[in-house]
Length: 343
Ligand code: 5GP
Ligand code: MN
Image (cartoon, rainbow, N blue to C red; front, side):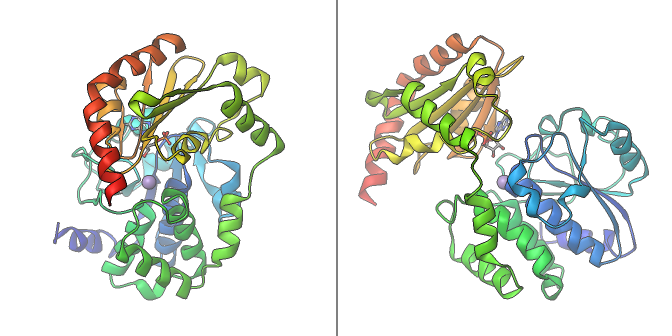
């Protein structure tokens, strides 16, 4: 690790054709860290393109030059051309190639250098150097550190800092999760660099449409099931719900978190039927680890308090599978509840 920054410095010492990869269904951290890094690298004279497997949510449309991002699903030829001519790759906010699907197929077996910057658990050895810091709130926080460790904190201008601050805000739920003294120091430095924190927060939080608010009402009124003996709640959505509400990617963002607003709840699940798979999002409080549940039951992963996975079984059986597994975790749920409330 100590030499990683020297390796990165060496790789960036001459002008490169850089492709930044981030993950499918990109969130504020994926988009913010990619754009923050892009603006920094362009400032250093590199040629930089961001590739994402699928489109970013609309509320991130205010980020500077977000429209230049190339979406692999829609612009495959253009994306492949950029991959073909790249001399250096950055892998941001993911640590295994299954998070980017086909996008990595044409480069993952070749020898061109790749730098990973990521805060998820269990990084796969798919890059070198690897900057992996699961204790950090966000990849955006790590991109700031990366720039700082290169000795370039003075290059962080308001364009870069708006991007990084946006991802910190979304990944910490507005400074609710993963807060550390270091995070607040970094946030302070972003504000000193010119971030308009009020503007960014307004874009990030006040962005719901009427449809999204009505859908939230439907989820809470008609699709929420509580299992108080396991301090767990779930919200599910069927294919018919998707049609009826014309649900698009991003419309259900944050719905799962409402369950954790009940103090006695420790685990929240959002289970929704997509065209070919059933997708599952889990959230938890305190020490309760939902990453292990996603890993064990749904071939997924993520973080201790926010994880996801998928199932090829129908919605009903996926829900049952999840419910049936809960007794296995009952002791851990109780223990984490009592620990959480005694802090
Ligand atoms: P979300 O529930 O918002 O989709 O994802 C929460 C966290 O879980 C994210 O940090 C994401 O990296 C991780 N995650 C979500 N879905 C999957 C998945 O299918 N596989 C893995 N390994 N991680 C996932
Ligand atoms: Mn992240």
